[in-house]
Length: 234
Image 1 (tube, rainbow, N blue to C red):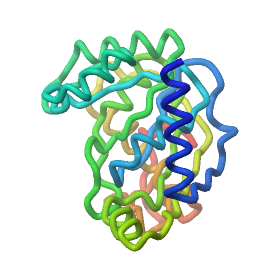
Image 2: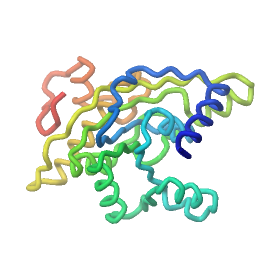
Image 3: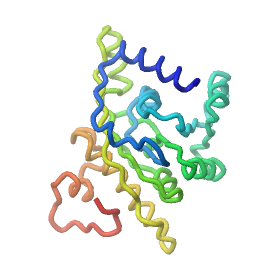
Image 4: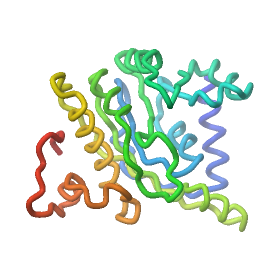
């Protein structure tokens, strides 16, 4: 009930502040475990991730730095959120997330691990690939445009509504973990996830993945001579 109230309130406020266009909403699974991944360009992204799925089984993770604030501790308890230490291998938190994913929850996570100050894609970290592969649930790629912190401040300062666009891609499964070569496996699947996100974004957002062969293949611009081994199928 609390989640529904918070979601409804957030949507009302966002409707005043922004014109939000969502494309591909039908790709969001109505039930079952899922890891939703997106680029991370602003603080508003967390609100967008909260209101997008019409589901009550959202798995929430909160960075450990917010434990110092009573406000965040209150909401963490209310939503049974999982505290995550971003600077260490937080196996306790990861095991809990995998358990909830296997029970059918949906998790929204930014594989980059931090906001991009430039608005373009940073190198992804293996956390999202690890969780999806361990729980054996689909990955749902999403692209967010127009919620950059600098843009939000500039437009609101001029009393102009934001123009935010979200594109939801088709969910896909990662192949089984290659236990003989885990490092290479997670690097390849992290690249796959990030390139799936990049394929939904305009070229100006592609960042470090701009010339990646997998992105070239997904967007139909496969360069000659680039190997494609080790990546999940398109």
